Amino acid sequence: MQSIFIIIPAYNEEKSIVAVLRGIQAANSAYRIVVVDDCSTDNTATRAQSAGVIVLRHAVNRGQGAALKTGTAYAIKQNANIVVHFDADGQFVAGEIADVIAPLIADATDIVFGSRFLGKDSNMPFLKRKLFLPLARLIHKFFKIKMTDPQSGLRAFRAAVFEKIAWQQDRMAHCSEIIFNAFQNKLRVREVPITVIYREFGQRFSGGLKIIKDIFFHSFIK
Amino acid sequence: MYIQQIIALLVIVFFITRLFRQRYDKNVNRQEFGFWLVFWVCAALAIIVLPYIDAWLSRLGFSSSGIQFLLYLAVAALFYFIFRLRLHVARLEKDLTTIIRELALWKQKE
Image 1 (tube, rainbow over the protein chains, first blue to last red):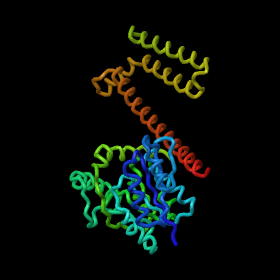
Image 2: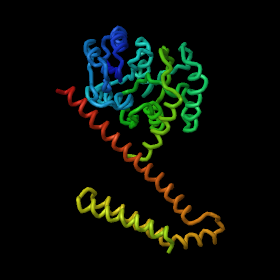
Image 3: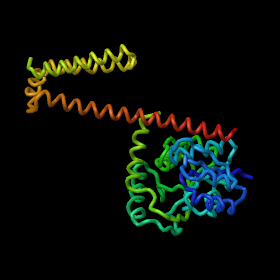
Image 4: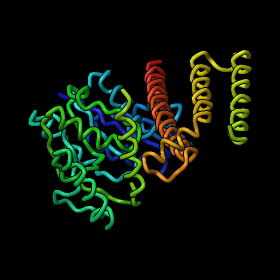
């Protein structure tokens, strides 16, 4: 029996967090869920605690990438076999976690990324679908990375490869960094189709520019 | 020496005396003091050799004056310092994240 940890970074998600947690618990009660509250100003942490999951709290807001790393570090310490990254805003479907981890359980791959472009229907905003993500894909091609979805937040990996993909980016640039590290370390990478339910636009063009800026400055520090 | 050069040198001397005062009051460390002293001495030297920079620039065929050249250099230096500052902030942010993470994990252990 594999020990599977679901890491959920959360910042001011009191409206959606309980439904997300209930969804995951209903999908598989054996999943161990860790919510990392990134210094929310609302009741995210207490609501998550009421759902009976592990809650870690950042005393200062450090960003999604930092929260994911905190949760992952905790999971590794708890002898996790597989770590899944999942969003707190309800845009992912809990039932699809099983699809994402299936290749890992079968030991067919080291890391799995959920893709919004492999057939499943997502109500993705037009600009995101036709401009932002193709642009991000183009940047990835420059680094010889072939991915249909360059910015997916639903991913899973074997705990054993954590050191190889360990990301340094605290904010949204962690997404690109994890993909880059996986390819650079020649890990077995796979994409599986997922559904994404958009309630808001999500990352904007300015967010993309910030990612490039973060990666640029970080490349100069150890 | 032109009157403008003398005024500029007086301003630099004022800043150097302020710098020594700050060092005397232990408001700046030795490294910082050294950096700013070198900076102001270089600025004073640049002001003193300004006519030579003018002549050198015209020999190279540039129409701009020495003071403009110094301004360009100053802007380039400013950009460099801003870049260094950004790197420093990035390092501090990274350290802060490490502390916050350790704190979160330690509190969970309790």
